[in-house]
Image 1 (cartoon, helix red, strand yellow):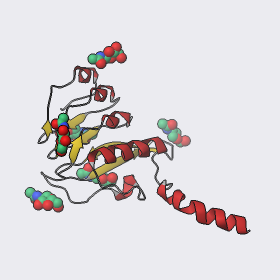
Image 2 (spheres, protein in one colour; image 1 turned 90 degrees about the vertical axis):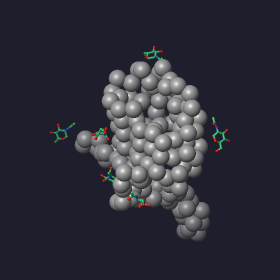
Image 3 (cartoon, rainbow, N blue to C red; image 1 turned 180 degrees about the vertical axis):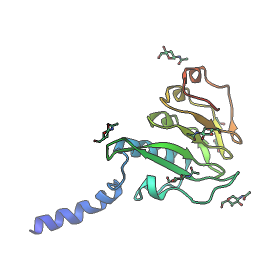
Image 4 (cartoon, protein in one colour; image 1 turned 135 degrees about the vertical axis):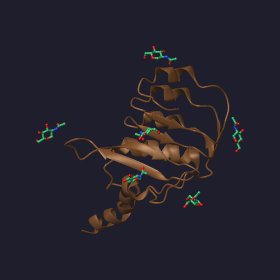
Length: 154
Ligand SMILES: *[C@@H]1O[C@H](CO)[C@@H](O)[C@H](O)[C@H]1NC(C)=O
Ligand SMILES: *[C@@H]1O[C@H](CO)[C@@H](O)[C@H](O)[C@H]1NC(C)=O
Ligand SMILES: *[C@@H]1O[C@H](CO)[C@@H](O)[C@H](O)[C@H]1NC(C)=O
Ligand SMILES: *[C@@H]1O[C@H](CO)[C@@H](O)[C@H](O)[C@H]1NC(C)=O
Ligand SMILES: *[C@@H]1O[C@H](CO)[C@@H](O)[C@H](O)[C@H]1NC(C)=O
Ligand SMILES: *[C@@H]1O[C@H](CO)[C@@H](O)[C@H](O)[C@H]1NC(C)=O
């Protein structure tokens, strides 16, 4: 009995830290963790990214949104859209966006992101829209992006 109590007290904080309530697979949460770190984004990983991370307010210069869509007939969901427009984020463009297999829309407009577009983005399986206007990017568009057959807007 004492052992059980000790185990609970010891492991409870970790149970919360791994956001066991989200419908996202843990691999996608890990990808978001890495992206958040590289962008200096204040995402709270004790909350459900699909429910708690989005602002209801958005306008032409600001948006803060992470949208998830469930798989048909499944309890699992995936990140389909991320918009972090106009948040004064600094840092580089994380290559890890390519590790979100269902991402359709990525909007990082109006920040202070620098460096180049990662060649790894050429393997985003479903991407439709990428918006990067109003940053401090350098270099050319990587030839790898020519492989994105789903991309409609850059
Ligand atoms: C857009 O929304 C942000 C955040 O609420 C606000 O600070 C900003 O003033 C708004 N801009 C416009 C043009 O409405
Ligand atoms: C923002 O995110 C919420 C929840 O993730 C979603 O329901 C909503 O449609 C999104 N809004 C926009 C403008 O994308
Ligand atoms: C989901 O379940 C319903 C009812 O069991 C079935 O008719 C449908 O074909 C399923 N859809 C998929 C995508 O498996
Ligand atoms: C992609 O961009 C187009 C045009 O801006 C827009 O109509 C569409 O809703 C966007 N798709 C997604 C998945 O956000
Ligand atoms: C990006 O900006 C940081 C400072 O904000 C700077 O240290 C770094 O050298 C810049 N990188 C590039 C590739 O411009
Ligand atoms: C595009 O994809 C093909 C097939 O996967 C690959 O062989 C080729 O190296 C890719 N091109 C670039 C520029 O990444």
